[in-house]
Image 1 (cartoon, rainbow, N blue to C red):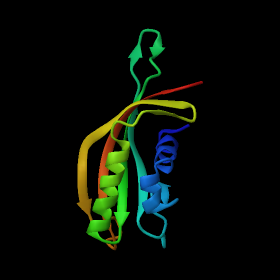
Image 2 (image 1 turned 90 degrees about the vertical axis):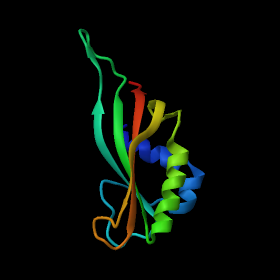
Image 3 (image 1 turned 30 degrees about the vertical axis):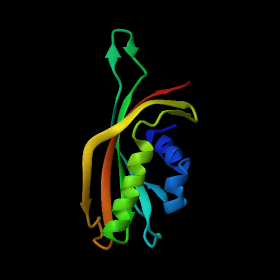
Length: 132
């Protein structure tokens, strides 16, 4: 399961988030004519430690959650709910065990890529172990 698929499954399992966005959680780009509020997920990077015998298979991934609303207040409230649900999240999601998840020093607002809605961008860092 990819990082974004894992995050999407995590978000879909949080009633406080799905109560606001329903199933409107998208990878990379917000589709045109999508109802708001919605979430868009972006992978920033993924690093796995190396040693003499190879990978340690305990990667750290950084990702962004764009919380998109029709107003500043809607994007802000959705961001608060997402932040609260994901910080310190620990669980097994599919074939991935999430051991640590925290905020990663990015929490900004803008008018989004199209300029017709508000976006609150939140970055997170997650350490996880995939099962094979």
